[in-house]
Image (cartoon, one colour):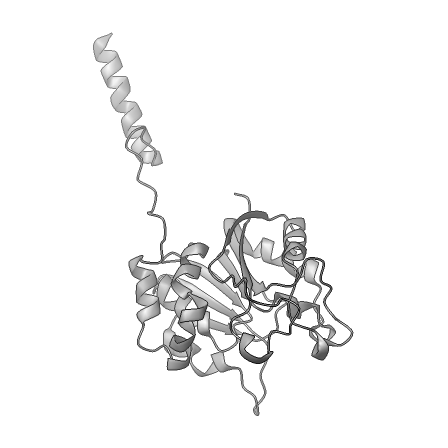
Length: 259
């Protein structure tokens, strides 16, 4: 009997090794990402970053934002509305050569080309998509979708975006367990976006509105970061007003697609 049990134990061990799961010998989970993780520090220190980007770091806290998003080497990230590419560059270095970043952008013109077009190819792991913020497709499941300071813009009629449909599309684009991170300028509770006159709008959004809309698409609100909060900001002012520009009270939300 003793020999039988010993043989059975060996068989179980071999079978478990073949399947990858051995009680007590499971591989350790990856260490949590922090603002001082090597790949995060490397992204912030990367020498190709423009001086204009570095000058914004003190207000944008990129290391803390990437750590909050949980960015890992090898990730696939969609940066929706990349603008000048501030986060696109950071993500490219942080995910490394085994990862990939998709800049989801609008089409430029010869007179006003999109900034990302000038450097995307230089990084080797950035794909610049210019079909607009809605209707894009990516052939591989994503680990993260990142939207910084433009969610409120999606309601302006000139963009023609169906926001609930876009949130559902982002849900489908993410792999189970993937994250959806949104940064935006905070408005007063109950604020209504002025869709009739975008030029007069204050370019802010009520945080509760985003939570309602994103969770309605199936996401779970997992965490909020206070790193971009500014209690001195008058949330009734346009974000371009005087010395508040770049210093607005901003919320940072992380939603997760259930695994």
